Length: 191
Image 1 (cartoon, rainbow, N blue to C red):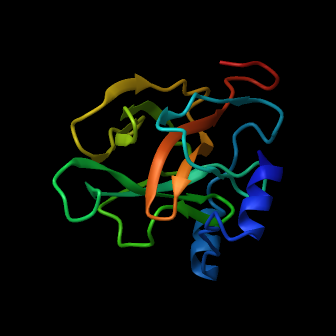
Image 2: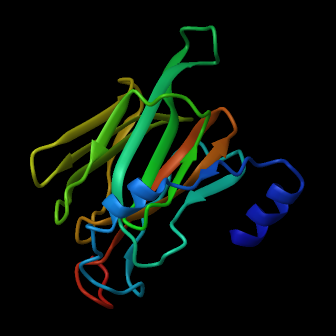
């Protein structure tokens, strides 16, 4: 996938929406540590939504970093219509301070800030031809929800509850398919 993505980026056919966090964000994020200290074992999920556009992904440059913030935005698609209310933007920040997103750079409608040792206990992606909604619950009772009511709901495999990143399908203005990736329950063992 990396080779195809590199070619698409070089040709200008895929947007590389990546932003570096400020020094303050990086210091704050350092309090979050990967409980496994390993990069060997990950739980992947199949993307929910469409897949007829370029593949995209959101992973940190540090293989042991875990997600500490999720943000999202939804709107009507196509723009100016009331056809489908879908997730158009998803952004992640990792314990390394790095930030990546897919979709238009807008002010997110929903945020989830994960405390150190707070895990994800539920992750549901609903979709059909696009990502209709993303809903997350945590071990500390937090809830994150972005998107509409359409699509078929898919419960994601959570591994040990610490999110690593995501795979999906993206256009510059729209998240079309999405699947989170988590660390495994134990080193070398898939959840």
